[in-house]
Length: 108
Image (cartoon, helix red, strand yellow):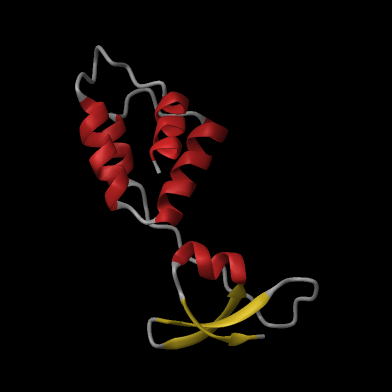
């Protein structure tokens, strides 16, 4: 987890003069987020860069929680599973199930 945060922090390039002592607070906020959110934040910052005006702490706190990508069950060549999500049964890839910590029901 520290490795991912360090990679996020380096990719964010925060203005340490404008936002002093933000690393520790941002790290605490980072640790409170789901692994899916942390991965999405890291991917976005690496791909698009970070908004220069935004304090990195608030970027982490305000980042919207990503949602699982659901499948129809007709896809081929993917490792699909049925999971329970908010009381409903859904189909997704095994990787999605693991990323979001979803409850496995059965292989599809």
